[in-house]
Image 1 (tube, helix red, strand yellow):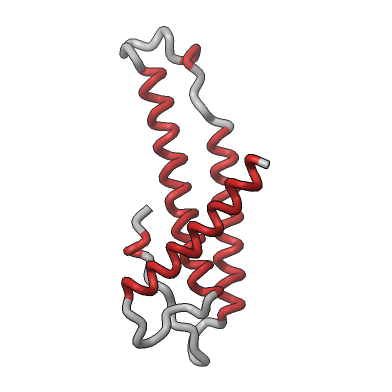
Image 2 (spheres, rainbow, N blue to C red; image 1 turned 90 degrees about the vertical axis):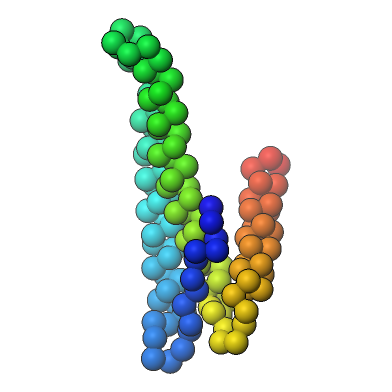
Length: 121
């Protein structure tokens, strides 16, 4: 994921509220998780390709499938970065962009590490 392209909104009185942004990001994240689950169920079976006219069609189909899942996962990760950034108050005027993204990436690393620890426990 290229988090450098994630631009955080500025939370202020004339814009969308922090709560509304968080609710929308949560809704979109849930939909993406459901889409990833649904897509995972569509994994190609080699037996469906063994009589294909192109040698290796099953392998190609499986690789294409995993690339589709990776693209959804990338969008999901961008939403996580946005959600974390919004939860921390959004873009702060005068804050250098690189420092902001470093802070968010560090926070996301902590969140992802906690998730990995839960899955392995």
